[in-house]
Amino acid sequence: MMLDNQFIFFFSALGAFNSLLLSIYFFVLGKPRQVSNYFLGGLLFVLSIRIWKSVFFYFNPELSKVYLQIGLSACFLIGPFLYLYVKAMVSPIKSIGFKDLLLLGLLAIFITVIGVLYPYASYPELWGGYFYKAINYQWFLFIVASVFLFRNQFSILIKKELSYQEVWVVSVISGVFIIWVAYYTSYYTSYIIGAISFSFVLYLSILLIYNKRKKSFKLEEKKEKYANQKIDEETANKLINEIDAVLRTEALYRNPNLTLVQLAKKLHMRPHIISQVVNDHLKTNFPLFINSYRIDEAKQRLQTSPNLKMEIIAEECGFNSTSTFYAAFKKLEQTTPAKYAKSQLIKTPDV
Image 1 (tube, rainbow, N blue to C red):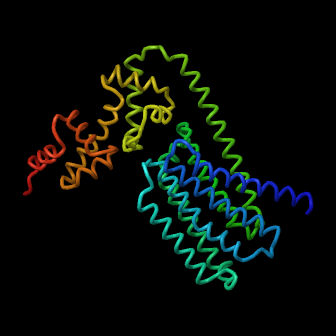
Image 2 (image 1 turned 45 degrees about the vertical axis):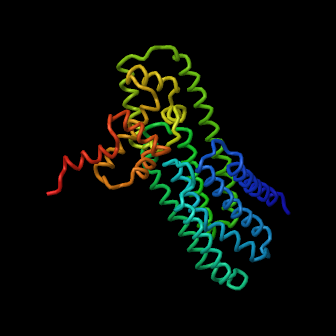
Image 3 (image 1 turned 45 degrees about the horizontal axis):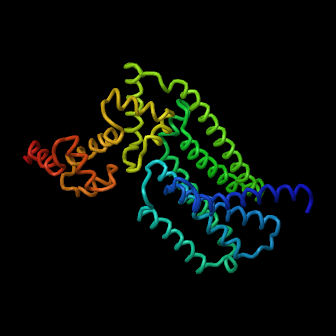
């Protein structure tokens, strides 16, 4: 193997190997234990399989058709894992939903059945032609769907600085798109370009995220200097409006496990700043403050869908349990959800 080929093999294989390690990390060790981490781990895992297949096939054209079929089958799941990862980042959930598992399960069963009925070894033209194109088109459609899910963050990319987590998502979407382009255009360039692009994107993303985190730490140190300063009314109002805008536009309150620290990271603020604004200027505490947004949405749902089960309303608005929902509603509205819904029916009788 010539020196150039040795470098290409090393660089491509290193990216695939690191992707495999990262997938294991997000599956097993990643903290906090979020649903998005599992989907990211799955994405990195199927990407690593796809890259390994490309690397081995490039340097060994006689590679068994079984491995080629496994590589393309894994490629069929790249788009879905990307979509579910972005979805989980946009709307955090406590556990993987049934619909998400159903989507992955059906797609996995479908590509497996196709592989059994039409194995690569017996139908190489089919896999190298129609199947390859269909898999790439499906992959691209899921990229488009992921961008649509994250469209609000993309629209403000130029106007404001993204948070640490948003940088993660943008890097993942952009990286997967670059890899798709590399494979889709490999007919005109080189087959190994896809694997090389993956390694390049992986290390570039790590560098971007590292720099973003380093910058965030410097920002935290800068804000620390003003930790003991009292917030004036004008500044407090601006902060309140900023907090309110983020909570409403991104519906962060629907996350039942939303913490002060998580909200602070989203807003690039020190947690004590938010706490001070909420306590001193809104005269409440953080849990009640977040619950007020949840109750506002619950009231809207009770007005528009009074027959909807309370358990469903509680869960969709961000409460861990129905009892917590009832207690918060009673505290903030001095009535129960059922009585409130009934009162709205009286106000708007059928005609």
